[in-house]
Image (cartoon, rainbow, N blue to C red; front, side, top):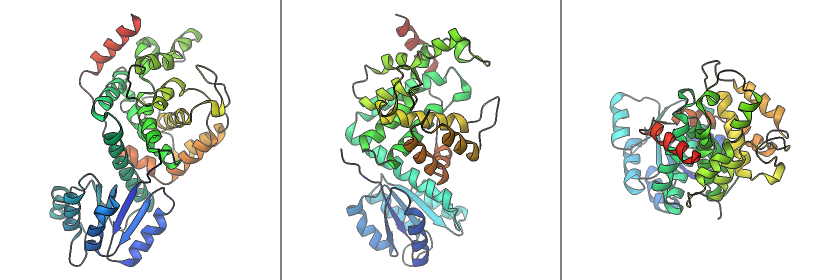
Length: 353
């Protein structure tokens, strides 16, 4: 399937502001359109069908809130962001209640933060659209999230890990120019990558110290257990299931369970592997603080070509430095799901049968 590049519309009556926005967004895989006149932008909505719309607030003839309210009526599924130099409480409430904005960004903005925010919004809208059009979205995603939450119910310190790995993986896949199907497969593969850990005993999974050789051998079975869990999901893309099985394979062939190397590992699995490593390094743990950007960059450079695919590392580093990953973590809304522990016990029982 041909890749659809996400589309963004920027509206500001100041041409210098639009020129600045054009410069900072030219490095991202977005199709950007710029308008000084909000009414002209409205006329273009039906044709462009944008994934995200970013608008200034103070404009002659039509305020940003009024413009985004009109956008919401014509194209409700796009994400909307308001730029404002002076945002009082009334304006903020109007922006949320009338314009349905997801974020209000103060001027002057931070380039890196704005890039990450807009890219994440565009990607989220694009993935939502693809899920609606190509997958049995509600049933599949509900099952996927239940499976991901089942393992996280075992360890409160990894709450939200799978959700973030899925989002990071999707961002990398999109940056690499993969098809919409593969971007969605990366997200689902990231969500599900550790589901096989439901079959790992708690005393091993939650052990604070180093695992023994026997314990590590049990832990290393979780990709194959995970594959058994996801195999019945007919709507799950093959690439996502492959990522569950092969997300611990190393680029040099030193990983598990099959010792695959290089191109023998599906690209989606290589992407999920890097996304998993990034989330593990940057997440707060009970025994350490999150790793710094400098540390992560050095680790990626150190292990590129050995543990990680160099091309995927380059993409992840690019998104890290552009602020995309920071925006993803900030925007993630990972809520505890009811019944996760019960679902985990049910899955573990089925594995033992």
